[in-house]
Each structure stands twice: as structure tokens, then as C-alpha cells.
Image 1 (cartoon, rainbow, N blue to C red):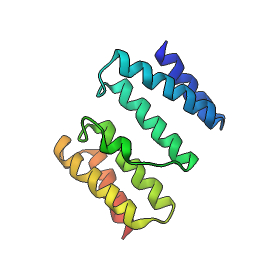
Image 2 (cartoon, helix red, strand yellow):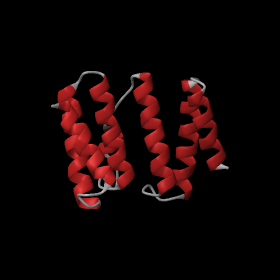
Image 3 (cartoon, helix red, strand yellow):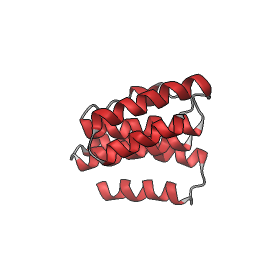
Length: 129
């Protein structure tokens, strides 16, 4: 059921119904937190999608990242990388650089230096310069 609720969130987000999408993501997240671990993939994916939705709504916050139980988890690092993308698209290059640097350091520890995700972050960081 929680997967279906999360799926509705995706559908609403795709349709531009951001308020409805937020409600679905919040409901799914609440359920995942009760039934699964905070670092479970389903929980982290929902947190990531909610964060992207908030970015779309202009409510971007790093509080979720700061409180994340596993800041070096690949889903968390991908979220930080996405924040870098958002800041770069807004012309906030200093903030983008900080996010990319955090993502890069974490990815170097969690993944190989040659991993495509790590190299993607290196590429985006290089594009800032």
C-alpha cells in the first residue's frame, strides 16, 4: 500500500499537482518510518523525492540531510548531488560547489573513485569552473 501511495506522489508530481504530491510523499514517508528502518531504501527514495519536490516548490532545506542517519549512504549522497544541480541551475555557484564537494567526499568513501556516480559529481564540479 505504501508503494502505491508513493506512486501516487510520483504521478501527482508529474502532473504538476505539487501539493497533492507532497501529501502522498508525506503519508508514504510516515508509513515507511513506522514499518521500515530510517535507512531503508524505500524510506530514502521517498525522502529524496520529497526533497526534489520541495526544491520545485522553492522550499529547499538541508535539515533532512543534516539529520540523515547515514550521511554516506548512496541515496543521501545522490540527494546532495541533486542539491548541487539545483543550486547550479539557480546560479548559486558557491552553494553548488559545497554540495558537489560533500557528495564527492562521501562517494569516494562509499563507492570507488572510478564509479560512474563519483565521476558524474566530478564532472559537474568541473563544469562550475
